[in-house]
Length: 201
Image (tube, one colour):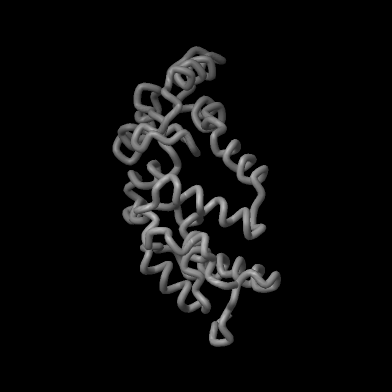
């Protein structure tokens, strides 16, 4: 695949992308037959679907213990309706989850009260977890960054791809890079990506 002119003028770092730059990225993916508008819309609508507090909150015995039998869901539903519908940290409406203000690591089951909950997106939720010390090191989620690197940098070898992933700040096991490299292999079969004969895979 020749380096696509649509991507030539994009900033080197995704942190510097404007809204127009992200639109260019979407146009590039569509122009190259990687996705369709309906697929993007379907995925986006799914990620706008509010958090599943019925199963993640109201079904937990530690939350139920604060309410008369059969009344927990009504309280959780009311709490959910009263929220802003945006991540408490970054303001996005995508991939919202009910999250503890003071973590369970500090309070144990006592953390499980509606007064101690807020809505956070998946990324911001991960960033604040003590178990994810390197969460938030990158701007994009890991799954998005893998594809952004592949499409914008178009590394000709797996080794270069893995190096770019580490340089970006991705800290997961190398097997995730190998899984993501499958996209390059698939696109090569369609004449949409050039993999060097020097590539390990």
